[in-house]
Length: 241
Image (cartoon, rainbow, N blue to C red):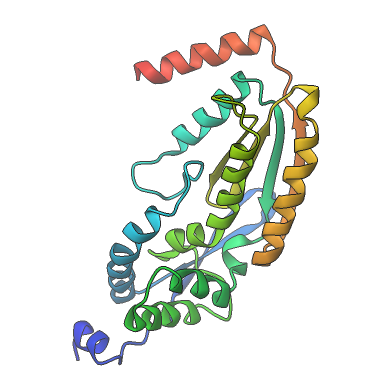
């Protein structure tokens, strides 16, 4: 039976993914689950259907694994916010994020935008093939699904920007690249309360998703003339390139 026939007749079953360990700093490893070629084809086809739908929902501060968005743009957004005196920084690391995505929460999020039983059945098959929870790192569709899962966090931060805006001036900025999130808050003393307020809302949003924050670092960037000069020099080099 051909792959297309299996899909049409609902006989398709994903094969077991090949596991590959990638060394990390500190003696740790990142486990990739690499699907078989036939399953990569199916995941790629499903991604072509879902990506345009959810791209319309993704927020401006989300950069990871999105079309026409790069890590360099994410870094520039952070640097620009620092130049604008948003120098109170919240830096979050999520514990084993890809491995802990709850399937029922993810499927509920997808179902709000996709009213197609065939698509939902296929997506559920892909998710359960990798275990009871998580989206496998190495899967073609996994980066898209990971962004879908965290979009509500991005929306909350966009609301925080809008709620504290003063005309064209904003006092909160954020950048998320997959499971790495940085929030930057204005340095003026009258905005110090935002640090606690935003931290509290982040904890609430991650609790809803059952995502554990491994590390939460809060820092004050000291902006000096020397650092300003270095920033603008590097920006000029990037622009010339």
